[in-house]
Each structure stands twice: as structure tokens, then as C-alpha cells.
View 1 (cartoon, rainbow, N blue to C red):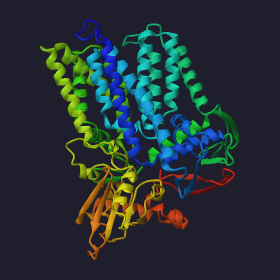
View 2 (cartoon, rainbow, N blue to C red; view 1 turned 45 degrees about the vertical axis):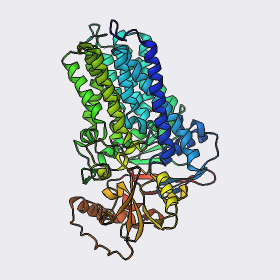
View 3 (tube, one colour; view 1 turned 135 degrees about the vertical axis):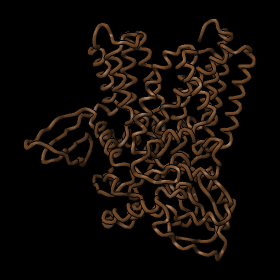
Length: 616
């Protein structure tokens, strides 16, 4: 807290206010948890965590680090659960969806509360009590923070630890003590266990430890601090190794391939790569982490199908994330945070130097994100959001300091918070689908897709809709990994070339066409009355009996359609080898998608493997 400030003597009232804002935040998380169904990634994340706890291994689930998965499956570890594989998808079987989701999501919401506490305490050290409360209020009313800290996924924890690691480095830089170096090493290790987009920040932090003088933006006069850097590096590596239960794997390089023997695995993984003539075997701690990182790098090099402003691409767009942030993050937060950044650059706010030093981390993160070929959601730049909120505090603190009337400054800040609350309420409780007020709520699918709008979350709302229309057949084209029947929904699957009459429900992602052979396959429905929009993620149409069936669109109808047709043609050879069940998943696959191994889950936990085209 900044001394000699008008509100520097109000810590008790500020603590009460912070507590109430945390309660408000958790209440919104609880509302989201109870009303939103399984999203696409949640079954895989939950099953990965459960298998790690039960079998002590990570099986095929090394595509992401295990920390978040281990944490949010703790309440489920001793429960009775079962699931099956359908093609490349994980399908929960029992118990009911709520018993899978609610405990796991509740753990993530507690992580969100911890995140808000860290943000508030940091703002208190930087600014006044009022400015810190302003930052906390904006965080508690941020749709991205509510949604991604209410899902059993890894994005929320990644944002928390990215912010925590930057703060841990700032603390170490200013103190240069062994205790803070120890803290930095632990936090960096946890960051590496959170998401595979963390290595750039990890390397940047180590570089700053090596070069900078304590508390100064110049080279350390004592020379490069190799001893301190390697101490932080070693501790971080130890934390990563612990996250993989101290596994040591045997890795063999021979015959132009590398063979990985993970502890507990019944089958080895084999990858082609250049090798020498003489076989070489090494033993590697936490080899699963390096394997997963390699998979993510390969995935990024190959590209991933994405949708952006009406266009499809497998290689991404440089402006995807900046534009997605403009569309998906609240306008008031963007404007206030930008004003705070400009004030810091102009040295017109307190702690401006610390703010600008911290800004290096999100700046590097965003620059690298803009080169990514995986553009499937603004959630991938969620780690930038806490830094933006911290700059919002700089703006508020400056307003309180320089304003002629403190009462006027308080009124202005309160007005911003109230407007933010009204803006967020437009989408509650479907916070995942939030777009700013300048985007028509029923047209968001034309701009962004998948986890930006529809990640498979509207099945609870669809179940309630069907109960209200129980006498009518429902035709459904759904994007998600669980079978809607798991939620008690009775439906007829709607394929791309079907044109039925009656009630037809289509996920927003399918309206955008991102995952279809024919991106315009369901656009014919826009000719008919729309009777409901469920959670801003699923559109329900009423097609009159005997309505004319529109002719199929030619493949040259749009650039996106031409691209889809090309990908489908090129992947025909791959589909020919698939079973009918797997073929249902094959339309989602392209030659750019890597082959992956899917375990046959048998009674003895399975030891068979088959290779299929996978949706990465």
C-alpha cells in the first residue's frame, strides 16, 4: 500500500471489500459450473489426471504437462469412474456428468480465487487501497477469468503461474537473496509443469538472473551470475521431475529412430529421426515432459485448422490474437489498461519502473504467440490478462492522485466497475462465449470459433430446451467430445448432407464451418426461423415440413470451402484405412495433423495400440 495516500488508512474496509469481491467471483464461477456442460478438452484432461493417480503413469497423455490435471482430479481420485474410447475421443460413461465435473471444476475455481488474491496483493504493494480494489473488481467481473477458472482445463493455472513467475523474478531482482532465488526456482518449475508455452518465459527469466544487477537495469558489475542461474535452473528441473513422480525413462537412438521406454508403459513410443550407426541408450528423468514439448513444437510447425473473421487456415494469422483480444476482452479493461501503460511509459504513475520491467514478460509472450500456427482460442494468451489488469490499477492510482476531487475520482472508478458488471451480465452465465458490446450476440460465430464461442458447453441448456419441447424430434449437429445422450438428450445426428424438417440444433462452431468438409454445410438453416440460441453457443431452428432442400454448394463457393475440399481430397488415402467408427472422426483430420497413438482401453488397462488419424 502506498503511504501518505488519501485512503492509506482504510485497510480493514479494503479487506472486507476484497472478501466480498472474492465471494462475488466464486458465485459466478459456481453459476458457470452448474450450467455449462463438458467442454471439448475436459474429458481428456480429467481422464489423464485420473490415470496418473491410479496407475502412476501418464500413458498417451503426455501432450500437456500434468500439474493442473493432477490437482483438479484430486477429489475424484478415489471415486468409481469409467470411460471408453470412440475413435480418438474419450467418452465418460459413469458416474453422471455432474459428479465428473463439479468437484474438478471447483478445484480450478479455488485456483482462480488464489489468482485474484495474488493480483490484489500485488496491486496493494504498487498502488493505493482504492486502486487495488478497482483492479480486483475488474478481475472478479472478467468473463475470461470466470470461464477458464471454472473449467477442468489447464489454461487458468497456466495464467496464474505465468504471473506468479514474473512476480517471483521481480522480487528476486530487487532483493537478490537466496530465499527469493529458492522461491523463483520453485515457481519456475511449477510453471513448466503447467503448460508447454512456458519455456520462452523460463529462458527469459534465467537470462535476467544471469545478467542483471540487483534492482538495476544494467549488467551485474560482479559479472555473469552462473552459480545463481544454475541453482534456479536445477531447482526448477527438480520440481518438474517430481511432477512426473521422479520417472526415469530409457531412450534408445538406433536405426534412424528414437525409442522411448517410459516407466509403466506396456508399449514403447517410436519416432523417426537421424541417428548414428552405433546404437546409443541414455536414461532421462522426466522424459515425458520433453516428449510432450516436442509434440507441441511439431504440432505448431505442422499447423492447426483455425477460423478467423470468416476464413479458414492451417497456418494461422499474425493478427489473430491481437484481434481476438479486442473482440473477447472487455473494452473498459482494454482502455483502462492501455491508459495505465501509457502513464507508466510517461513515468506519470507510481512504481512505473517495476511496471515496465514486468511488461517485458507479456510483450515477449505476445510477440511469440503472434508467430504461432495454432490459432484456436484467445485462451492461449490468457497469461497476458493479469498484466493488463495491473496496468488498469496504474490508471486508477494516477486518477486518484492527480484528480482535483477525490470524490469525483471514486465516482469515475465506480462507474467503470458498474458498466463492466452490466457488460458481463449480457452473457452470464455463459461467460466462455463472451464478446464485447460492439459485436452482435447472435453473430459471434462469423468472427471466431471453437473455444472463443462454442466449446461444446451448451448441453445443459439443450436438455432444458428439449424438456420444454418434448413432443418434437431434435436433429443435432454438436461439437463436443461427450455424447449428448450422456446428458439425457434424445436426438437424431445431423450430418453435413442432411436437410431434415422440424427442430434442428447446430453448434456455433459448425455454423462457422471450421471443422467440416463443407464449411457452408449448415448455412442453409439461416433461411428458417431461429427459435432459440442456447448459451450463445448453439442455434436452434424450426424448419417447416416439406421445405425445399437447397442444392449443395459448389466447392468454389468460397476460399474457405475450397481449402476444405483440398484438405479432404489430400487426406483420402488416410481415411481409407479407418474403420466406420473411426471414419466418423476422419473428416476432422488433415495431412497436417500428426499421427498419434490411441490406447485400446481393456479390462487390464490395455496394452494394445493402434494408429489412427487424430484431431490434435
